[in-house]
Amino acid sequence: MFNRVLIANRGEIALRIIRALKEMGIETVAVYSEADEDALYRRYADETICIGPAPSAKSYLDIPRIIAAAEVANVDAIHPGYGFLSENSDFAEICRDCKIGFIGPSPETIAEVGDKARAKEMARAANVPVIPGSQGILRDDADAIALAAEIGYPVMVKASAGGGGRGMRMANSELVLPREMQAASAEAEAAFGNGDLYLEKFIERPRHVEVQILADNYGNVVHLGERDCSTQRRHQKLIEESPCPVIDPDLRQRMGEAAVRLAKASNYVNAGTVEFLLDSHGDFYFMELNSRLQVEHPVTEAVTGIDLVKEQVRIAAGEELSFTQDDVTISGHAIECRINAEDPDNNFRPSPGRVGLYVASSGPGVRVDSHLFSGYSIPSHYDSMVGKVIVHRSTREEAIATMQRALSEMIIEGIHTTIPLHQRILRHGDFRAGMIDTGFIDQFLG
Image (cartoon, rainbow, N blue to C red; front, side, top):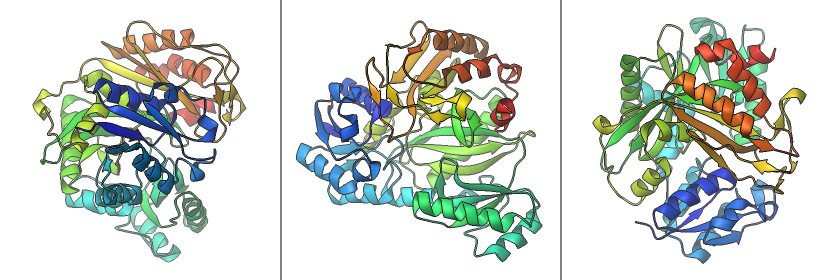
């Protein structure tokens, strides 16, 4: 087992990882930018190292600075969290070259599954259903127009190296397809340094359902049920829950088995998430495999009782999974609301600034993952998410009621947050009935 681990991240996920490592008896090293000098997670780490100024490119995305910090601190491994360098195969490879453990998949696997077009080819080979579309990267406009005519409009143009909703455009006709391709490619080039595109049939009114997997170095792969992430705005998730309200045991098993087949086909090791679109007929289609811990991992932890961060560390340290698929049970219902420092009534404008009084929700069935405290100044340089409220109860109805109570108790003064939006969503009849799709929020917001 590792003795000392560096967390190459910030905010609530850095704090979450530090807590897991402390419980495992592992020393923690936290890195921070100048903007995060007063960050809460610094107070709980055994050692902290400043890695540069506020901009991510000069701190949290600066591989040489992070590797230098790891070497100075004499750590055994690095946990990348999510975002930043978590799915950067070059970073994982440099860690390996420097004989520093990387708590995640191999660099080869990250590169392979991170290329969305190659991942789809892998899914086809593993007999995992995929959305009809291009077999690889689009060559040009003519290639896309011919394929779209074959599979039928509407179609989705997607960045091969994309994520987080960037580099995605829908086209309803041949007339607009070239324009949307140009826009998607430009956005992908700016965000990921790769403007390659692929094309898929647009699935109307789908649910976004993902399956959590764990895989060790000895060929053992298990799935931990599914999460429904359909409540999202512009491909950014707002609320996640487990289990999915419309999935029965048979469909859960088929989706889980498909995720395991894909993991085995890609020689996947560590924690990962296989994302699917689920249509109104109960058919599911592979979207992508995320080679990292997800923001919404706590809902899976709640319904399975399995600590995903600890499992990641054990696997990276060379341990075998201590349980099999038969040992995994889904108990009750969990819901997570992401709390962002944004103003929902002003086109979700970011709301950084100094927090006044901060009081976290608590009580039976409530967990809060957040790095906020009274007097903390939220930097303007990073993602606007400042916390997550997770509830776990026996039934979905009880979970919704507990979440409503928890959000009403949470106090974050001095900034705007998405809490009022979540409260409105939780009261909506379609959400309460579980009858939503990925277009629900757009309709809800009008």
